[in-house]
Length: 503
Ligand SMILES: Nc1ncnc2c1ncn2[C@@H]1O[C@H](COP(=O)(O)OP(=O)(O)OP(=O)(O)O)[C@@H](O)[C@H]1O
Image (cartoon, rainbow, N blue to C red; front, top):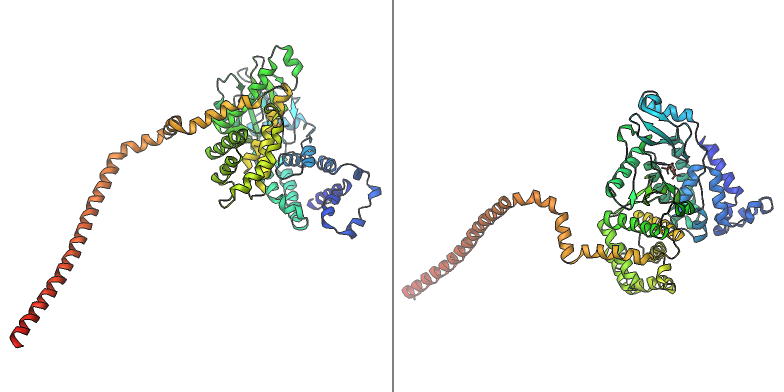
């Protein structure tokens, strides 16, 4: 089976002229003779379009791979990244009999005993899962997400082929190593693994819901844990209008510019308050409730940021908007992103060269996502390894900005974001910073404080016995010195006595 799949990959790659992209670098003229240009009409299309079409022909897992690849703008040329971002996974739904069979095997009883109602017709279907509406026994409307049957072996199989292709390409294609193909495939495999476990997705959903409980900005479905399994996730059914249906939203009396501002606010709250963000913010996953609040679904990919990441981001953004490129360079080095021995002057100049042109535009037109991307690109020459969570963040930022600007082209992102960054910075430094850090350490204090008297006593005791030991050693040394002097005096006296008596 592997062999036939590999053969299919080779044939599709050939049909869409992907060999040309490779061979353009290899200078293997003899091989180029086999390209048979006239028989391949696809070769007239631009290279990035051909790659997109080839991935579409290879099926849903390769499409997902291309979608992920499109977010690695730090690695890919722009034409590839733009084209791959257009990949759509329109996968036909799997038959409802199969859905019912999966549910029966998971719950160990027929579906009509689990749910009061179950809608056979799926609301949506994608490469990994599909969603059906249902009603719980107590009458609560729910959404049921079910993994595609036997998706795990299909994924394992395709990922194995991708790994083999990546290894091959890295060894024969000069760009293969630079693009870190094997690492990219490994990261993709990790993402897919996460998406294959709906308990993990349910946990992500539940964490985000807790972070935004009673928020006037964002609604997140409640997870119905009693019904959740690795292959099935059951959650609150949300009612809203897709964010892309702007006209419908307007008719419903939603304030669109306000909606755009709220979107940016939600994103910055997730990043700078919680360090935990929804990282799959494409319009299909965002709805707006009739009360004007955002509704998020699909929690397969989430990003998490450490305090150090947040610090790095806030410092970079603030320094960037003050055009303080030296500070940007220093922040990279201090955070350990750039090697310690990086020359600040050179790094500063490189950052200036990529960032300064952005300031040709009015501040409200500056895309944060692009700023980050530029910073990543400048950093690459200085051996800065961009962390996966920052790549996710940059991708999400581009999504959020795109969305915000679609809703309101006049949206001033900097004005919306600045208070978040400044507030966060204020919380990190000065008296407020001290109070925040003390509060964060409070739970540790509760454990350490009661032990303090015992620890102090123990230490003093140790010191006292240490002091005694030291004093004793000192006395012994003094005594030895005195003994030596005494011995010398005795020898001298005996000598004198001897001299007086006999000389
Ligand atoms: N809790 C919910 N309430 C109402 N509708 C939902 C809910 N969860 C999912 N849906 C519907 O199902 C669709 C697909 O859900 P989701 O994005 O979670 O699936 P997916 O398989 O990960 O899809 P994709 O990978 O294309 O984003 C959503 O766009 C939405 O229309």
